[in-house]
Length: 232
Ligand code: GRF
Image 1 (spheres, rainbow, N blue to C red):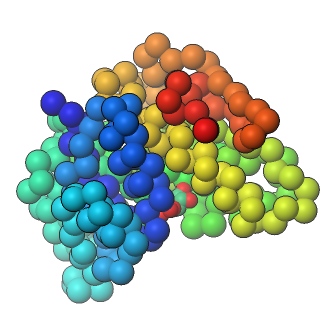
Image 2: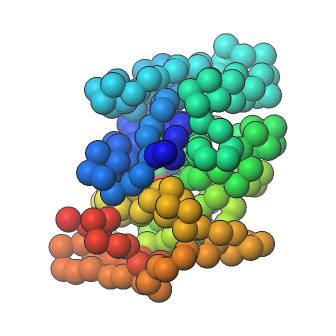
């Protein structure tokens, strides 16, 4: 059975799109069962509808507490057949912290993407913060979610060189291009049962140490991106 996924978005949903496209291409053995958003106008919901994927808009301000909001998300996610044994919850630009109660409903099955090389530059503006700091290498991270923001065990990271004077937006755009490669790759590994977690370490069964590409988009990814997941 394809791994059932619930994808949570707050914005444009380009990562959601990349995941759905790689599923359609037969590269990720998963099925997006539902896309949820705390923002009814999120374009990510449109992207889901365009693919015939069920959606749920749950404005967080309609709930009396964070716990009540998360409890309703858990209910909706489970109602679409996403459970903690076979399924996964995918945060794709979801701009809200999850409660411990939510995480306990899906232990080690909640994943997130962050536009920086964690543990550097956690928070809402990872790529811009890295550019403002003047780093020479920037990138993105897919990790398991724990109770601390942008903190859980790392599945895959990819780096790009920062170009002097390019500005935060241009750097973020190149990082986003890589996000669209590493997130589906991480989910493919999860769906194939190739990930195991020991303490903070995620082992990826059978993965190459790293892969790199040039010249169109110079990058370094570790573990390495497999064919089909590399930047076009
Ligand atoms: C991405 O940069 C992601 O890393 C961050 O939020 C952004 C979401 O972009 N968590 P999109 O909605 O997937 O286009």
